[in-house]
Image (cartoon, rainbow, N blue to C red; front, side, top):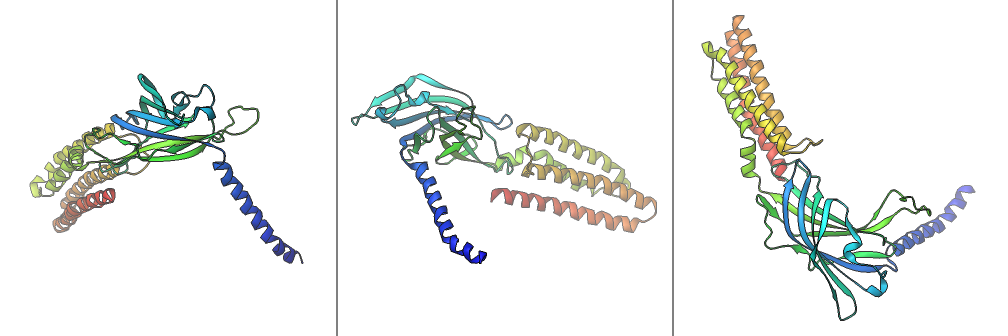
Length: 329
């Protein structure tokens, strides 16, 4: 009997859930003042990957009805760049125009140093999303909503980044909910309109790949050469192995200075690990070769040397091809 009564109530529960969901959607969009916002980025520079930042100069504009806004409302004073370390408005390039319909159109130029979490997993074939977050101050998501001006928002034609391909800008508007009440007595958590301007950029990485990782590739060549040293020349292998090791260590410090700390195994990590492995294999195989020859096992030593030679000569390039192909996808 209890099971039958539960089944009878299921349609009512379903209708209640639908009505609650509809109220949530209505609340998010009803009775809010729409403020169109756009951006024109004039320059991007100081892309500092180790320091996780970049600098931008841009024009930002908005259009709003002053009759619907607080008396002291000015768009450039009521927004903040939430991911900026520092930012400032250029005062002599800050304008307000009254349209024929009575609305106010503002244009403001600013410069900002922005925090950027660079994704270097596929460096130097990486793709980045340079992002600027703006958010409303004081007026929350109950009162206003930012609407992207996608038609006029763009990256300047004269903007160029050496070594990068700059793609068209993307705009994402949403409400950002803070996990705190900021000490407000009502206990309501803050929800504010936010807009993200995203500029996708792709690195031209082929030249950088060869120049930045040249030391590792030189160490591979050195390790391959040492397997041609046999007989009385076996003792000379140690000198070549140390040369390859120094090449790896020196190149590692160079690359580590160019990239930030990262908890993801990257293409750079793959190249470094593979290079140190072949150096270690070269050292261990040379020691094993000497031991076998001292025990009179010249034939076994020769076969062992051939196997290791082919493993290193073919295995290292195969790993490089795999890593680069994954990065280019």
